[in-house]
Length: 242
Image 1 (cartoon, rainbow, N blue to C red):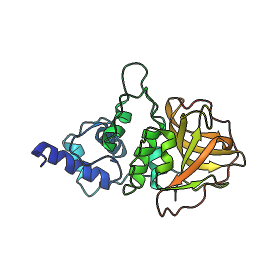
Image 2: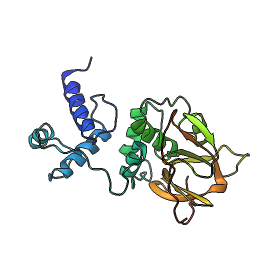
Image 3: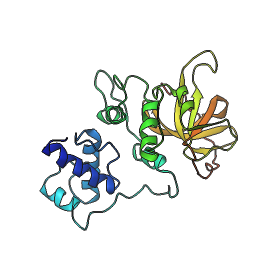
């Protein structure tokens, strides 16, 4: 049973989730994902973008004029995992001994052991986005291991035209002689490349192209129905996913 303070925080999280600002677990803890949601809500309603929910914030949050979060422009029809991924573009790990609380918040929300953002976090990012977009799809494998994402949902192997929002797995140092890899969410494709949003791409969440020759396979949630990723003009390929 949550104590009164946690009950109040959980109620606040539920309201922010209903309005599409909060994407974490309804746990009453008020961690970094909650603070980010409050900041986004306040900014959308013309208030100072601070994470403290004062009386005006609470009045607006529960009032009839509370607005749902607007989706970024140009992504109508994209699955919710990509909507969340785009929202997080620019999130960057913290150099040195400190950690980005947003990244650490994903691990906490997923009940995932994770020591710090100096450990590759592409799988953690995808795990968070997939939980937001497809909360009922199990993630019962080592999410931190990029190649382990073959166990997620349905592995559809290598296809010429990947589904929009599919989880793409890459080899990184060697296709067969290394366990190193990378994982991201598909946003586009070309003859020789696939584009996607991923974490730990030059230490940040970014959208970039990858060579198709590196693809190990694609995975999608069970019974996933989606349009194909759009054909696009290929750009420069990624050189850093570690």
